[in-house]
Length: 154
Image (cartoon, rainbow, N blue to C red; front, side):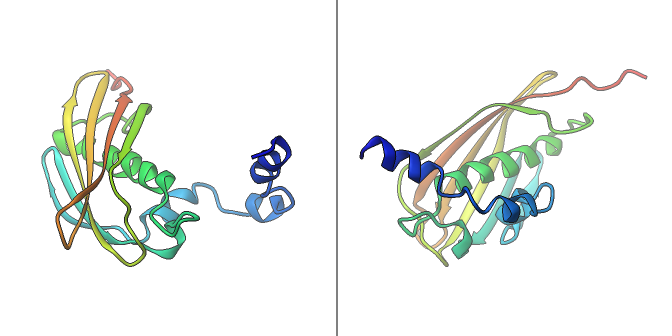
C-alpha cells in the first residue's frame, strides 16, 4: 500500500467530526454492551452471552477485534467487585491483551466468561474467554490487568 493510500485510510473519518463530536459522553459502553446478557454471576466469575450485532463487525464481516477488546475491558472490570473489592471504582487499565483464535459472525450466539485470577490491594488480573455457544469453541482469550485505587481510610 502506498503512503498516501495509508494516509487516506487513516483520515477517512475526517469531515464527519460534527457527527462524532455530537455523540453522547461514554457512548462506547452502550454501543458494546447493548446486546449483553448476564447469565451467571458468582464470586470471582461472570458469564455473559450475546448475539453478535451488525454494528460490532469489521470490514471482513466478523466480530471486530476492538469490540472484543472493549468487551474484555467492560466484562473484565465488572468481575472485580464480585470478590469483595469495594474501592471507589474498578481501577485503571494497565494492560489489555486479546488473542484471536477464530472468527465470530453476525447473529452468532457467544458466551463471554470473566474470571478474577487475582484481586489484591493495588492490582487485579482478570481472564476473559470468548466461546461460540453452539460448539463451545473458544474463539478469543483476553487478559486484563488493572491498577486499583486505594480505598479511603476516612
